[in-house]
Image 1 (tube, rainbow, N blue to C red):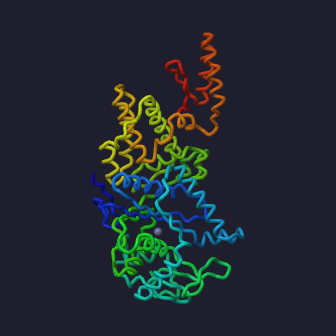
Image 2: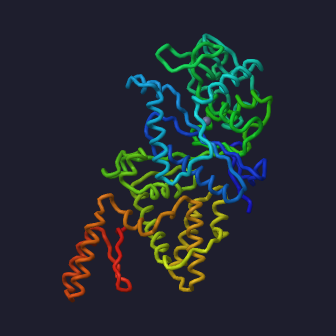
Image 3: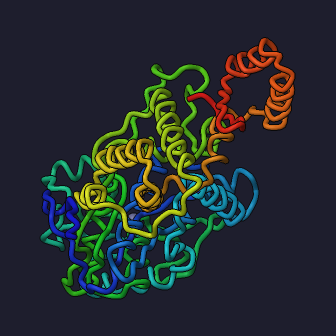
Length: 459
Ligand SMILES: [Zn+2]
């Protein structure tokens, strides 16, 4: 099946064919680790994780790099304020990032290059850019000279005045052109820095990704470069300029993909979710799987409204899907692929809303099916589709018991169910109903089937 992806560079959907049919290469700009990840930072992680899963199912190998920016002025400031080395800050927040993304079902990327481990590659690339006349040193700074690259602006399609305004550049005296951007800057003695031919300093942000891509993938184009929409300009425009000039004009990336923003409207949020925007805190209020489903509920290029209703709806959807899966617990899932309709949706520029609708269709069919072979096939399809979306991989019973608020007291519920069972055994229907109604009032629903009582959290 052909996969079509929207390429920001050409502004159209194109059939995706990796340069090497055996191996897809993809790079996504990852976190700057100075704080907990915001839900807006989680969107590219989840979107490109879903793309990574789709590529894994369609090609023999995928190399997915998601970098970590572990030196930055905000990190430096935080380390200085706390009187600790920057690694204390970056280790702490990288661990938190891994934990948060793990809770959202994000698979670890194949490689996770860190800036501080690529300083040599960064310096070498800057030296080459100076040698080719694309960069210059002035006052301990090294700058990329934008007019030296005639295709500058091809990705963002901005004209020169827009670019200068958009980059919010101050017209510093050391700049030969107002659009020129920093490759290397000096560090004061109390600031993190590395020795370089231009004195002790640290890299600018844009050069990091160019150097990490070169070091990990070599010269020549990678297949896919992704990130948030806000990175198109100046970050990705600058990456193209640096890498193309440092590589004698060789193509840098074949397909550019960008996800839309997450809009947070605090006014629309009630107190319980109001102003909670860090994944770390959201996970205290809702299961990670539900947060992931919200992030996949809009097409990745569209803006996404983050609302309490959306989170609630995602939980209800997962409740339905897990209930369908639970009803199939007596059959062994067939080991088949995800069905064509579902795959076609994902292959159409990662149309996750359509793919989710297809998933619900399968769940509906599962709820109606009685034939054992069909039920086994539908169970296999639910799990295969679920894996591609990063959903439905936990035990349905665990989901139904854990889906509600964190204050669900499993032991107390089980004890009440046992009491109710005893009441029913002595035909005390009034007591049995009282216990059931009490639990229902607390959002716990009981279901009696074949002499057994199960419970779940109401959605
Ligand atoms: Zn980047």
